[in-house]
Image (cartoon, rainbow, N blue to C red; front, side, top):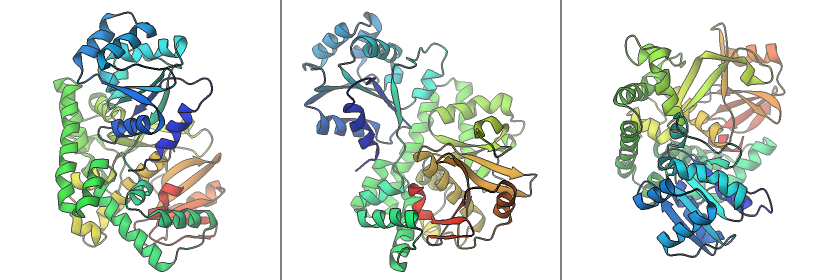
Length: 433
């Protein structure tokens, strides 16, 4: 499967100077190991692969010798029985969060041996780094986040390159797609709400064209997240993390989607469940949308720390976890009007995060609410999300009269257009924002 991160990996390899060891981080099973081995096979003469979770001896070596690059290279060569040639051999260190000294060694490679090309992957790297004992090589590594496949990558996997070009042209020109292309894109979008972007899920769906076949894969992925909770947290923390995690469908079923601790369990509060939310965010299992109290730069300076929304980082896992049937999604939630908004908001949030936007929301005394606020081209842009063609909204009117933005974006099932300073973006085109 084509992944857009590949271009960034190639740019990293081709740097003439100041290349630092690279860390790819993200949730489990988003394809980190796959993309790194594909990168190695396509861009290098050879590569060596170390998995610290599986290779106990390699972990022991890093833990018991001086972190001198030449010594480490010799030990890796002995272990893998491969010659490591600077610039020509890629060194892949997988599940690096399980070996703290391997993470620390990146500092010495950056300072003393930058000629070696080193890439690392870690599924729970954020959780590991957050532990007090971890010493992270700040300023000595580059970092890239890999999310599950976004809708554009889903289209690539389905050989819909021409449709991608049409969508990208539509968002640039505001010219509507031909009706049959618009309808085709909406149908594929509904499929994506079911599959989400986990590579194993999409691969299975393309091979079998069966939604039933992908559900057991999604179940296994969700179970692996739960297993990680038990593995990388105390028993007490695990209980709280799982309770917070399981509350997400309930949180998003409400009209007011602000995260409410009381929906986790009676008596829950920031003090006893805040760490659980942080763990889920660090593990990249959830994404957080923070409330801003004022629309001024920098938005981060106007965050209300007590108010936020939480979404799952993969829409397919969310629709499965929420037990929404395939039939209801394909019929576009005819029987689930209230929950439709939650699904679409989750999808849009995930898509914006994939495009490297920080996401915020805004509300005015409970009378108006804008689903997403982003910084784009140094402008603060409001984004209103509608799950259908009914795009009437007092909230956006209130916002635009008060703050007079450069323009606003309205996401719905409607085709491309630009009217009254509002850019209409179809749901399937969020990846192009």
